[in-house]
Image (cartoon, rainbow over all chains, first blue to last red; front, side, top):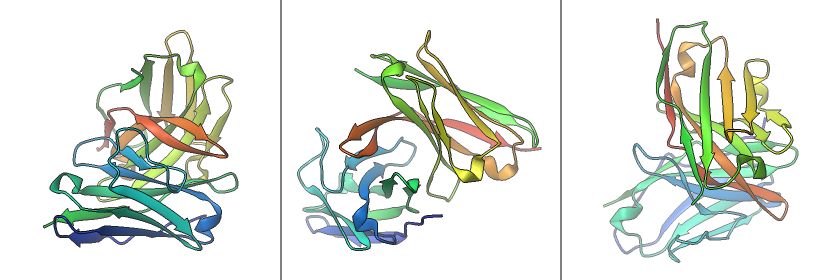
Length: 107
Length: 121
């Protein structure tokens, strides 16, 4: 089965850039999405199709996907961005796979 | 505004079955694909299954094959997820999510509020 690997945790200072990675075999050949999940809440998509931002998601969120790694970048990180972030790959052969999630701490 | 509303929390004994519902409002569920995703304590999100509410086609994760069934009731715009032979490690929050398609991919644009299923003797 297909697997996606994320770091368990990432820390960033307010105003700095947070980078969260998601690794999988030939992930660059699939589409990656990212979801933010705050404690006790349902996930919310922040990036889809590698680098598309849904309406309502701030411009400080961006994404890229190449080789074996997809990356979520949050520029000018704010305290409100503290949450868990999950990557997801979609491929016709591997169906849907989620990463293990990364807890982003803003301190 | 499109919304998915799920049924309430459940407590079940090992070996029992649970059926969780997901009702769409704001638009007919038959226009979309609906997936079920769960999150067990201390774990990440886990994709379980998908159903086309339009034609009833389904796709199940290999891990859940034979144990999960998705059905749709178009008259009430509701999708049901039944999980059988429950074990303690099925304790999780179960989410339904609408699939939005973009080019050759899909992503989950709307989520239900989640349903806690607790399996305990």
